[in-house]
Image 1 (cartoon, rainbow, N blue to C red):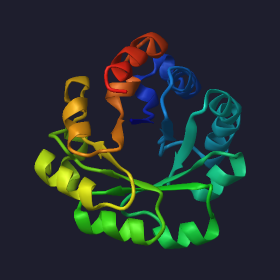
Image 2 (spheres, helix red, strand yellow):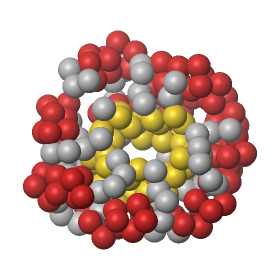
Image 3 (cartoon, rainbow, N blue to C red):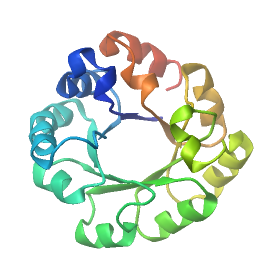
Image 4 (cartoon, rainbow, N blue to C red):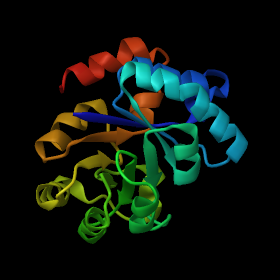
Length: 202
């Protein structure tokens, strides 16, 4: 199971992004997306440079939201493209494998387009009701989500309203993993709490 944490430093003690991301890395999260849209390029680059060695040491994939150029320059593993971000095909041509290209998707068409354009994986949702995803539409539910997982040629990660009690249902629907902000970033002691959450589903 791929565990995909999306950072939100407002949930971290003293708003410390490095502390939050480091805790996720050390807790054994598979992939971590740095998604701090209000930070400057300089600050994001510096944060990535600090985190990349630790991510490599613990086997985590570190990705940056929306900026493949900054991600590659800092030595990160890849980029996560928002649904309205840079075209997948263009990014894939400019940044070939093993640089990871993920894409946010909200429909079957978007998933298949991303796969055809060279994405390595996608997040798909919202699967369940969540305030943060109301702007992109109603929850698709597990039946529709599962159908898309089964026909997708690339890994699909469930996103939107993902709670610990729902992980097994998402995985049973055919997901390659789960992506979330609060599930992974809310625990105050991620190295102690997250392995318990993840261990139940590996």
